[in-house]
Length: 238
Image (cartoon, rainbow, N blue to C red):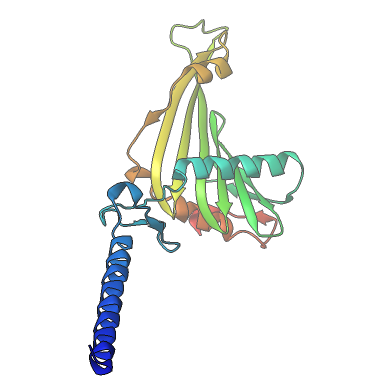
């Protein structure tokens, strides 16, 4: 074999070697990109915290704190601040001769604003009412109202008559300025009975809130007295 043929054979052999090498490398690269199910590890997206590679139907739902729980927590905070003497109070007096009714309005404030308003009213000689309004950022979130009156017990001795106290407690829960829950508790106690124990033994009853949608109107009337004269005329007739 002459030199020219030898040279051609060497070139062909080298070309075959390079071709085989490329085929092997390509085959290895392809197999390395293919993973078995057991080897697959999903990645986590920082935006949605959803695993890439899982079903798109997977939803992450955040559960906010229950509104009633929020209201109770805010109520506890106000009562704690009240007990510690953190509020500044301002008292106003009013009188409604034609009802008849007379009462006091007490505002409790902190550096943020008014946090609680208490309206104590005496209605004639047989009854009265106390309504307490709780606020956060100027918005009403809870009202606790107690109405009470007394009457003579049926069949009691006319010379030494016994009496019966009647109490109605109302609890109004508001969330985003809407009534979401209304509770009523009614109980009575004779002279020889403990009124507080009767109240503790009586359960609250859920009632429709439609009849009590004027709470913000009453609050507005009370708020209008703030900063005015200390002694007022009948506030309900303004």
